[in-house]
Length: 341
Image (tube, rainbow, N blue to C red; front, side, top):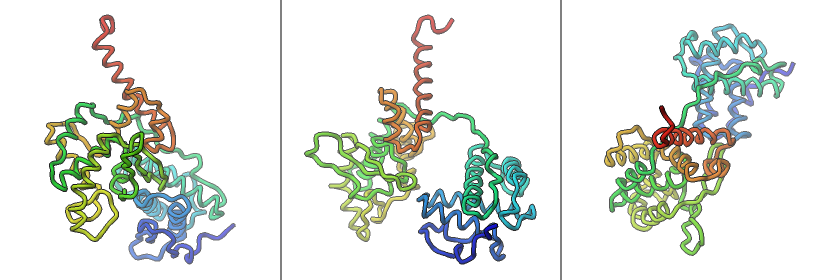
């Protein structure tokens, strides 16, 4: 049997994310073979697979809890783990019997995916002779429709956003950008000025370069409303904000001239929704959902929407077709003379 991962490998520093660099917290006890194996896996996911820092951090939390569960069960080495341990941990996620908090179906499913990936990695690398998690499947969440708001509600929010000040121009540009491109909020706040092209001489829409999950790059058109709002911000708003900072290349700046945070973007949207008298719970992801739903309602092909959203699989995008189908049913039931009776 190949010996468990070495401490020398586990102490390397190959990834920029703190989540994948630190050893699991084990109450100051020396790391076990399982701890070192988890560190090796996270290093692999960060370097070879290019997982984002937020995803690595979530995997770190999930697998640290798994390591505690295994320690309590008497497992000291990766090769000691059996399918019984894995299924027991899945049950513990649902009932909290390991002393941790109970997880909903979606959070538990994400955790099981992390555990399955860990064991697959160990088996492929020869750390364990078999993969005890290969037949353990994550719980299946019920199909939840994305929350989208109407075109009229989006318009009201966008028109309520911003004033003729530097921060006001930024707010309007940010929200117009999110709805015009369907970008994730992390993608939007991570943009630099050089990632966009507002060429006035171009025959078609402006183009934006987005970097999605796993640092995958995609090009997305920017509609005329979004382009005009962005241009106004770049000309009249951003220079004033940039003068307060240290020369960051970030596109969207905060009041101190630094890159705007996701939390600030959320606050900007909530303020605009409140000003527009929108009582529904909205978030930056609401604009992404609405972007996809409105495109499909307008006749866009689902694979085109998949590309625009940066989904790895079209099945992820197809959930939006359920939203439009539900809308059609509602319209039919209200309008057709023999729909109900």
